[in-house]
Amino acid sequence: MSKSYQFTVGDIQCAVLLEGESTKTSEAIAERYPKVSQDEIEAALGGTAGDDSLNCLYINSGGTRILADVGFGAAGPPDSGGLVAALNSIDLTPADIDIVYLTHFHGDHIAGLMADEDPLEFPNARFITMDAEWQEWIGRWAGSNSPQERRQFERFTAMRDRFSFVAAGDSVAPGVTVVDLAGHTLGHSGLLVESQGERLLHVVDLLHQSFQFARTEWHFIFDSDGDMAVKARRRVLQRCADEGLLTLFYHLKFPGLGMVKRRGDSFSWHPLERAP
Ligand SMILES: [Zn+2]
Image (cartoon, rainbow, N blue to C red; front, side, top):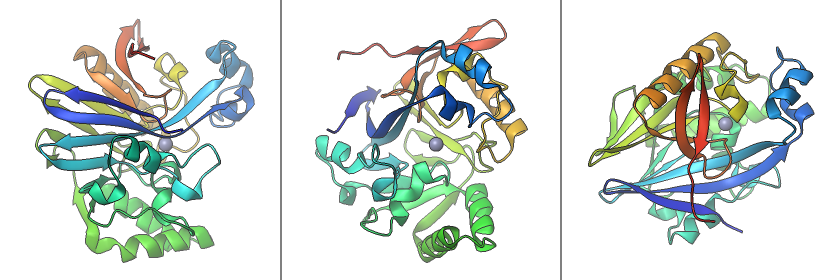
């Protein structure tokens, strides 16, 4: 079953496309926060399972069709690989995409491009990412002994001519601007969508579980620079709250849209109310 959620930001059409979703046990979640005890994780979850969605953002800005991240595709766990069906559900195919924007180079965001069988093809798209992201991962993969990382190095360097590199503040299309989120990876970035006084900030992997709104200091195991990630989390959540921005998170429960509010020294999450 495909899931998509269409909405507008001014006159820019957007959709959240569900690539996959799962629930994780408290044990599985605790493994991802190595400096936090399982008891603390269970208390933070409050007896609920941890939702983990994969929310890709589609943006149509004046006819330029942008897709932010591509998910696992055929390379992922059984509860992933839904992106193409979700695109189809809004009458699009990968061939309709003009720009694939890669927020960072973790597998849950890019692996579909590198699947051994049936890799995702976007035949008419150019690829955009932060220069720092390309440098970090091409450098890591080039020196790796892992066959998988060597393959990733070969696939991405073969695609090099299709890539453009951007920095924070650069425009990707009218009303779509790159936002620095560095920390989770060294070139982790999001997108600010603005039109007619309305705004959406896609903050991608700024956090991975909703308990991190209250516990912004909890380090996530896959952060390239944990301290920088904590600082980025606080800075950007504060911006979302202060500016009253509609905010999208890649991993929060589909569609991952809502508002961030201040709560004392930390924050709280208010998911968008929507029709079932
Ligand atoms: Zn992720």
